[in-house]
Length: 450
Figure 1 (cartoon, rainbow, N blue to C red):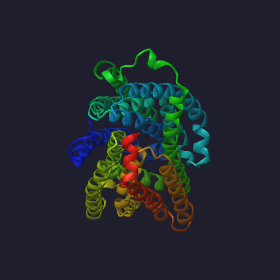
Figure 2 (figure 1 turned 90 degrees about the vertical axis):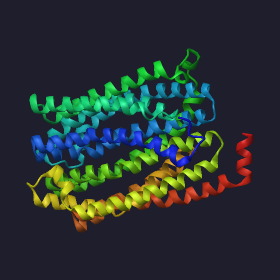
Figure 3 (figure 1 turned 90 degrees about the horizontal axis):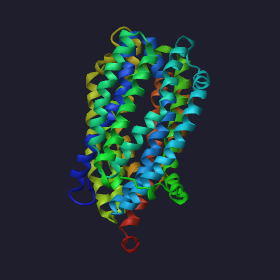
Figure 4 (figure 1 turned 135 degrees about the vertical axis):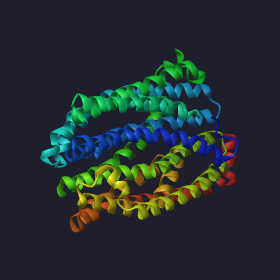
């Protein structure tokens, strides 16, 4: 899909909707693990899976950020009509991803148990948590396989095909989960193994589709020549975006540490509520993902005015959605938390409800954060999002340690809203500065002559 011509809002929404469904399916991998663990095995299993969430995000978030950052260059070249450059970008991303897969798998597997112990994971769920996360880490190459192929296809405007293959993998994931957990009694290990197999299937299907159906991504022998300048260019943009996700994950690890000190009940409440929270704002995240490709293609095509229009229109829709969802949580009370927790633990249910009410009140800030941050990334700015990530880390650590110590679970619930607000400030400042810059006659003249 060419995002450089046509109605900006229509293009962004048509690109974002398949992206949203795909993100929903990916999130459903973990949500499905949590749901089945809580319902079929017990609250301890739910807490075990939930307690690994921050560590999981630390590693897999890095992978996701890397894929997004590397694909920006591919997308900019596609917008500029530089198809030779598109193939070179694809090749560079493959080479870097292979090395990344090896290093991250080894380091993650070796550090899994020490990290869980450091975070004071409750002893009664430590082994189950380790069995789950160590298998997930052995599957890092499969996560990279899908991440690489899906982001490359999205970079050239195809957000629908990855969704199709992800849907196939999700159905497979459900079947394997039920078989491994309910039939073979593999517990949390079965849930992790099902995820790896599903990721491998979806990634393999994407690669086969690229080879057969996308000619501009058909790599030639000349493209495989290792170009250190090309690799360096991708690393300069991809690594800051990847580290930005890891910085955010470190804040989440701090929250996990604070939660573990409150006990299994608090971990279970936060785990269940955070899954619902993610589902609620996932469309906002998808708007941000669409803006990465939209901004990158239009930046490469030297059309800065289209970037401004796209950001403005999608921001209006995102803010309206944020208000509606916040009202929904206020009106439905315990309904959504009870889907995961049932009615066996009223105190846990109450804590989960409080989390949702607090976080949803700040979704407007979160929606603008996603859209502005990813638009900046699409225009090649990896520095400001990293600064925003550091601000987010500081605010989240403050809430988890200081407010958590003073107000317990309620204090920890404010870690996300405060982090969002902290990240929003540098992003909005940088965005307005860049918008003023790209609107200037001097800048547009420079673009047209570059």
